[in-house]
Image (cartoon, rainbow, N blue to C red; front, top):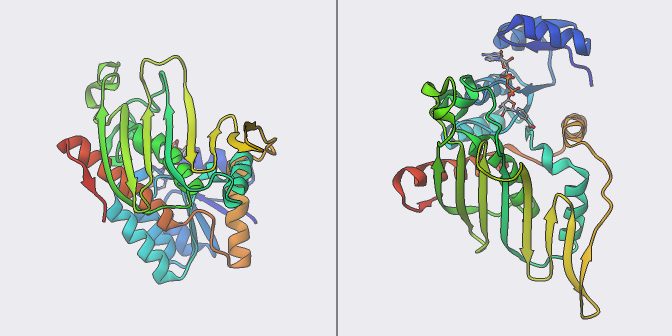
Length: 310
Ligand SMILES: NC(=O)c1ccc[n+]([C@@H]2O[C@H](COP(=O)([O-])OP(=O)(O)OC[C@H]3O[C@@H](n4cnc5c(N)ncnc54)[C@H](O)[C@@H]3O)[C@@H](O)[C@H]2O)c1
């Protein structure tokens, strides 16, 4: 595949990236790029609130779309994107890079062979001690980001967990959000997103996921984790371990995973899906299910009630 154009409202940034990767043309208006170029696919990596308009415009001009996470800042927007993709008959892939990692793919083979049995409970989180991205910029402005670490980091681990569990359908969520660090930091006057979120999500197959995400919290160190508990075995990611029984003994399995870089494999997969007309491993519908849960968690945090997910 060849990258033929970049569009960014920040022309300097677009030019620098174009130079770095040998991309021939630069635009400051993505609509102009879509009109003037003959593109097969578009990678949407604008701030979160611009995923929907850019992806919909790309579908309408006949492009396949690889969309950064989260799909959008709300399920309503995500729904419109999925519909636009269907109407255009184009591939809608979500950039859920963690699905493509070597350790994830190795664990998935064990799960698909039934080695974990039915996964009925999972704990997952991406929690930072200190790590608020772009303080004062779009990440910390709800109108552009849709939220804080829940929609920035939680989206990754929630998707990864749901992927490993076989993409179960969410039915309800109950959660809390806090902003204890951002507003107290220099430039924090306009900080209007959370810096920590915790939630319980229930699925139609009866499974439960506990989820936590933070940009700042008083913990020892940053952690990214997925712990799965199934009827026949359990597993941890980072590092990959499987806990089961063999010959009547409890055993821990430590598979050697190939060092596959998730982002590289994801980009390659998008191109392969276009060339071979395949359904991607991570679809727009998967992205929509995740943002439906995030919407419900934010709503629950506001009302203090459990929120049902349609
Ligand atoms: N999958 C991952 O691991 C991963 C990692 C980082 C970021 N992301 C996602 O990628 C997206 C971008 O994040 P980032 O950290 O690169 O942000 P960023 O602010 O560094 O980059 C966003 C770019 O979009 C440009 N932009 C803004 N409005 C635009 C418009 N109307 N048209 C064209 N370009 C416009 C900005 O000028 C900027 O260069 C976000 O959705 C984020 O969640 C994903």
